[in-house]
Structure formats: C-alpha cells, structure tokens
Image (cartoon, rainbow, N blue to C red):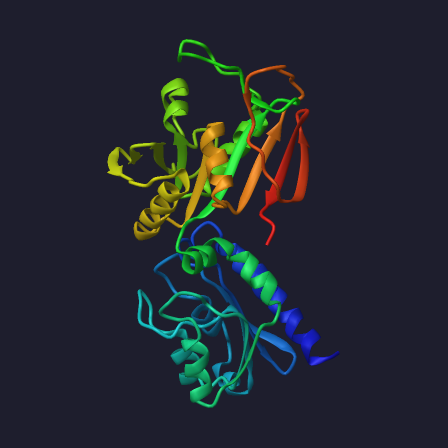
Length: 328
C-alpha cells in the first residue's frame, strides 16, 4: 500500500472520531486524532467538549505504553494548536512527548493558530505532512472555517413551500392563519435544525403576522437566539441594535459583522420570502433546506428563487426535502 493510501486510511478514522464531538465541541471545531505505531493504532481521541482536552491530548492519554510514542505517527484532522487558550498548546505536547511524525488533514484558519502549530512542530524537528483528505477535513468544520475566514456566521436558509412555489397565502393581518406545509415528522426535523444553530432570524412582517416561538420544543437541545430584522435595524434576543445602510445588502453585511463580533458562528434564516431573498441576492448563504408539499395554492406569496447544488433529496410523509449548497 502506498504511503498516501495509508495516510488517508488513518485520516478517515480521524474524521470518524471527530464527529463524536458534534454535540459538545462547538464553538470549537470537531477534531479527531489517531496514533499509529508500526502499522497498529495504539491511541485515539477526539475533542469532546469546548474548554476540555483537545483530540491530541485525549489520544496521547489513551496510549497504554507511552514509551512507544517516540516511534509513532500522530494523525490529526485539524492543525494542532500553538497557543494557550482554555488548554495548553497541543503542538508543544507533541514535541514534549517526542512524537517524530505528524500528519495533518488541514490547517486551522483561527488567527491564533493558522500555520503556527505546523511551524512550531517543524522548528522542533518533527516531520509534518499536511493536506491529507484536506477537502473532507475542511467540509467537516465548514461552519467554524466560514466564521474565521469570511468573518460572518455560517448561514443556512430554510423554508417550506407549496408544489406550485408559494410559501403562504397573501395575508393582511395575524387574524388570518398561515398555511402549514410541514408534517409532524418534518417539523421535528426543522427543530433539530434550529438546535444545531446558535441564532435564528426572521423578518419583521413574519414576526408580526405569525408570532413564531422559534424554539426547539419538538427536539432536544438549546433554543437558538432569536433575531428579528427590519429596515430600521434588528432585535437580537430582545435588544434593539440600529443597522444603518443604504441597501439591503449593506445592512445585511453590517449585521453579519455584528454577529461575528458577538461570536455567533451559525445562523438559521427562516423567513419570510423577502428576507430570504435578500440574503440570496446578497450572496449571504451557505446552504438551504427547502421543503415542498404536494399542496397547491394557485396564488399567494412566492417562494424565494435560489440557485445552487442539490446534494440530497428526501421524501418524508409525502413532502420532498431538498438540501442545496451554494456553488463554489
């Protein structure tokens, strides 16, 4: 087996381990680490929870015979950190344990790392190989990476629509009930999506017409922070913030900068149609979840228009759910 194939085999295991931290690692990235001695895995670990030990620390701690570390290779899906944060730098731990070889999936774009971990290792004489399954490693932490490279939250758009492309009937007041396209099963999926995001945004008209709770009451997890957007500004968790700008795009970019400053890494945008379309027109989105019901309305509020790559289609209770990612 070629060395590249061997490296990819162990890096795939790192990615499997990293996903075990999906619930607890945020806002830190998901990271997995594997230690190999003469073709045998002798240690594994992943980052379980923000503020606790990183993947490399857990992997090293799991090794039953520490004397083997000086003849081993550690595989890690994300560049080892080189700074003192809530935990000491992992790059220094690797050096202290005399591990001679390090294989890295991708660099960490976080400003306090971003190549410094690799440089620290190489300066100490450690052999480092970078870029093994890089695309897959970047994809796993796309939310974290978007936040640190584009300086905005990772944005998911979500809406439900009729078979003929409407998200609701035209309503003049909150006394007129909205059309419900979701089933109990697909509604639970929506609430799961909410639990996976730190904040959720709707437009002022949706807020006034529907009085949405924006909670995860049909799923387990924390409620996202509610954001209501209007032309005059935003209300974030009950606090009003003025967002000045000549155009929708300018206002949205200013809002994204504000959310980045607040440390909000993930944002779910639920509506209405005009708000969703403004995000699409400003190119401020990363993925979309569109639920289409067999119901036909014939007239009403048109659904947003979006162009992207459909990666998955599900059929649940007669409703079609499409996952779309922005074309790179």
